[in-house]
Length: 385
Image 1 (cartoon, one colour):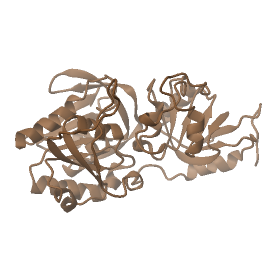
Image 2 (cartoon, rainbow, N blue to C red):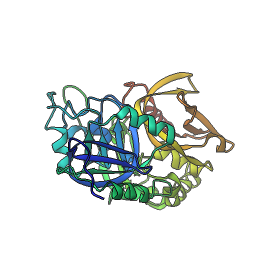
Image 3 (cartoon, one colour):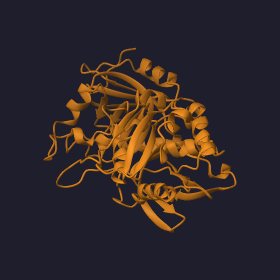
Image 4 (tube, rainbow, N blue to C red):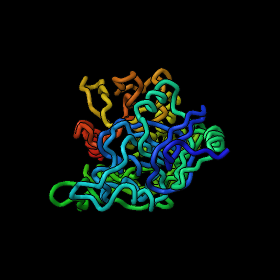
């Protein structure tokens, strides 16, 4: 059946339960299917869309002013958007920012990403909270005609993220070096010229700003693909190993990542630091388990408690799976927990410099609340030297 909504909207979001949201399309035309999540951040929409951890997801932004500062190449976390699409309340306005290199809609269109504006995102967010992250089909057709039955069927046919290994799809094709440091006024991004520590970073979908933070902490970073073996890692004679963020089901990625991490832990005493999916990979390698969350954590205002210091950090989150704290084996200490729902946000080995966190310390929502984690990693490598 071909149906048109009143007033000829040009985009339609169809949920697997048959619920339809109509709005105005922008960005690319066409259709996409994905899991739907919501993000509560007030800034950073470009970083969110280019975060590889959002592979397989359409992002609903709860903050209405999306696109008002335009886009700039400096804010990309990877070369192109990875999120499947975006849902916003208000259509993007003409950008007003001295750093803007163009409007959001044009940026999305040239990169093949669909967006819909004019949606009641509060209603949509409540639905996600209550029923969990739904499977959806998002369509943008300038003619305003949609086969809604077909869209709902496509949403229902989407396989979902459980059991899906997406790290292989977003990882680098080959190894490379990284020496760019964090942005700082007035010079912008500068290069690391006097590194102190050799770090191998495993790219499960690494954000550029994580690599910049490692470089700013004094690291000479070599990035390896997600499928790197223990031998691949140790062939670089590193002082430490970093496990990056990434998308998909950690149990699926763990099929090849866990043996590598276990090999590093069994054959060396190297410091190991993980973030997001890297945190989940480390937990699996240490004998813990992961679980799918109802709607996940996505935003830049998540309070996390550090049990070592009793301090609360305001953190950036982006994950739909979590480490099951009840499954942590002896000798593994829970270091951080979410103050929203008590879920696990950090672990460490009791007697070795091996640790990880679920949140994103490089995203600076605090803005500097969590950068100490990169310094802790550097200090562990310095202590071992």
